Length: 177
Image 1 (cartoon, rainbow, N blue to C red):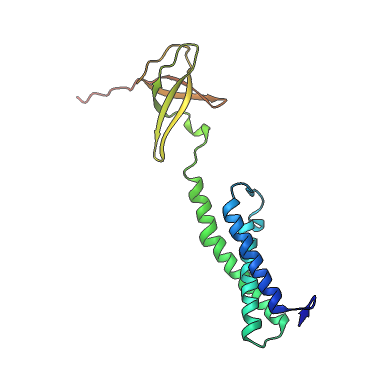
Image 2 (tube, rainbow, N blue to C red):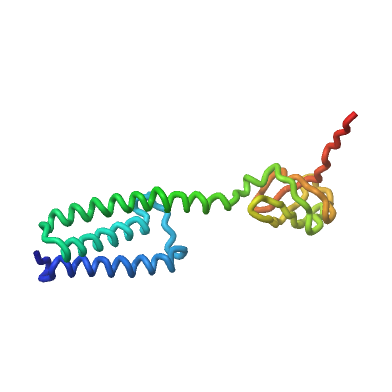
């Protein structure tokens, strides 16, 4: 069969080459063209579908003598199955792993940190908070409006406009009798 005076094999091959080039470009420029839509419209999934559909269609046209409508159906079914596996077993776990290293400012409330730049009573200093994924240094101001010296342990009371509101933290000592 021919479409636009081109054999189907050639159309499948052009689709495969085009999808391959767009996939490589998307890998390089994914951060610039960030996608926030529904999962089924993710460019990775669409490009993977077109690539698999075109590759299997090309191979079936080249190797077998099956009717072209059956080849389109088999190729589409194969592409849907493989893209579903790709999404479920690769893309979703990767997106969850990426989010686990991110912290929200609201997660810092109640955390204990150390002052690394002294905090004046009416100004700003800096606090270092240790976490599993690393250290977080944030600007801070005194919640109680009292100066806080370097090395003092502080408790994060609140966060306002990216600045931590901290108070001196005294640990309660317990004695065993």
